Image 1 (cartoon, one colour):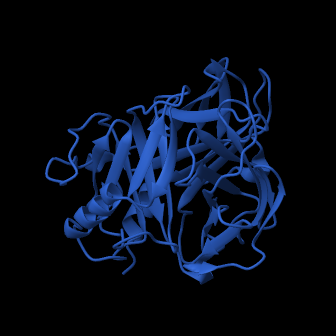
Image 2 (image 1 turned 180 degrees about the vertical axis):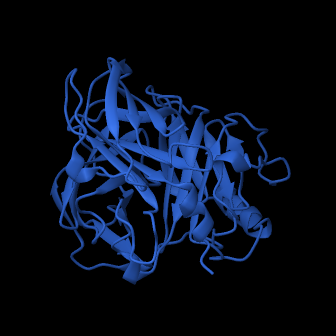
Image 3 (image 1 turned 30 degrees about the vertical axis):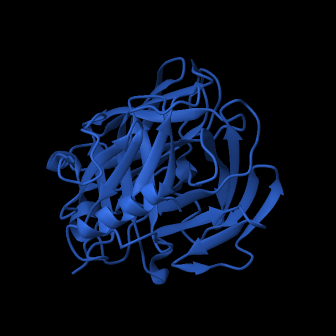
Length: 342
């Protein structure tokens, strides 16, 4: 680890805003793509509470071009194997690599660092909540691919099928009425897109492609969120939706789609590569939305807007709009209020 990264870790530890593990879900909209470059944390941005989970006490800053750091009430001092983090671009076709739970690098399609607005999601769960949230981190360097969940190595949890193609046993939430979100997470490479191809009965097939069009081995983080309500809740915590088809006639797969409040969902193609999804309460103020493509050829999908229960999605391949399948996860305002746990 170089001196610059060690310095950043030390500064984050000194500036932690509260105790570790005080809450279990943090999400916010990073609406400022170009805050002042500052590794001290003094000039970091506090997200709008309108688009941030309750009690998150979060902030973010920029360490350089396309280099973002995060600090919030749940981040431990150092890297965590017991949590999942996603940081997806918002309103741009940047591609971001989650290097650590507290730092992400974003690139344009030419491999240069790119500033971007973004959507940040962090979560941890107990093992007996795997039907609600199943997640893990896969690392591939220094030997065979390894899966880490709940802070421990899961022997036999991941297998490699071919270059950049993996089979992951993620857990109970990776089944019907759920969404699986994947993002590259690797300090050894960049400009790589990892996405799920399918999931069922706890198992997820993941493919990683370089933006230049070839498969590549890479580490990644993945999370399955269930749209089913728990016995002690009146509503589910997550909205989930999956658009299955290529071409001009999109189709919402009802087996893998469910609004947390049981409202009617739908998907409309507004133009090539652009979709409008009626998702549920998560696509509103105090909610949160994430999207991942499900394309065999490495297309990327991004959230470009959300509100009033709808989310707008744009998908591209090599910078060109393209119609592809995708999956969406939404964290509802309810998620942000009951997670922190009592």
